[in-house]
Image 1: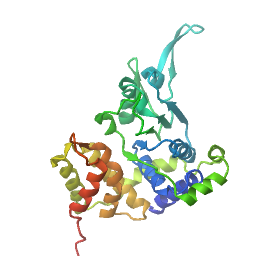
Image 2 (image 1 turned 180 degrees about the vertical axis):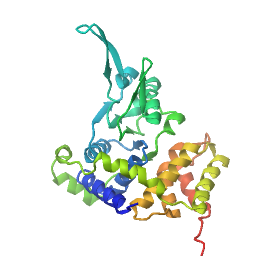
Image 3 (image 1 turned 90 degrees about the vertical axis):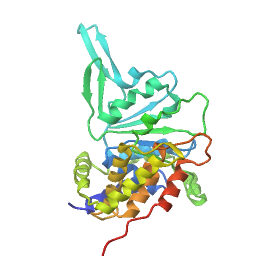
Image 4 (image 1 turned 45 degrees about the horizontal axis):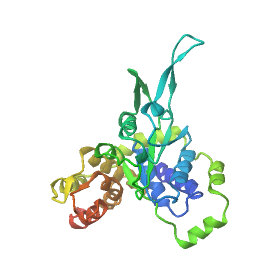
Length: 313
């Protein structure tokens, strides 16, 4: 296995996206982790921080077909999946694919759609397939759903249920740029112009090769046990009504492998697990009613409390 293939891929992606979104290399790297792990991303942040631009830049960097869907309360499931319509010229029904038939799907402001429309994403996110009128269609790889939502807006929104939140590999946040970075953005050309000028820096074949290679990253018994210690802690805690699922444990395991490969190693260390836990675990946790503790803070406390396995000499 060639570890340099992972580090080269990460560098090209972060540099290309960095032309559009300044100072957010860590977020771009996490999105790349999701892509290699065949996961999906929930990007949650304040309005106007560049969420949509970042996802457009990432889609342009990896090539493939890109579709953006603006979620609204009147959006129907068939608007996403597609419909069978009667073609009068040919005298038969014909399938018209919806916007979910792409390689990179941007579900913009996903929490504005009703639960019925949100549920239309469940099958394609988990199984990479869509069923319409009893016929199943497989999605072309790579396939990734990147959803955005604004946490400060509550009017006309429908919060995602736990079952759907668990299907997102990571939940990420951009945050504001530094003062110097934002001044630089004010003086440069428009972000849309920069996105349009971006070139593809990673081929589909390369992504497929990295997906096939990352399971070879070594995870010793102590590291696997550490991941299970974290998962079991969330399941036994009295501060939570819902702990990490097995899907979440697998996501943390795979994310740590890819993070190690991006760092130029063929083995996982505890720091890889701790780094990925902050993005993989919080959105899968449900804090008890009335608690002032956020899921993010719970994970931070947990990582400080649980002993890290030490290297055995």
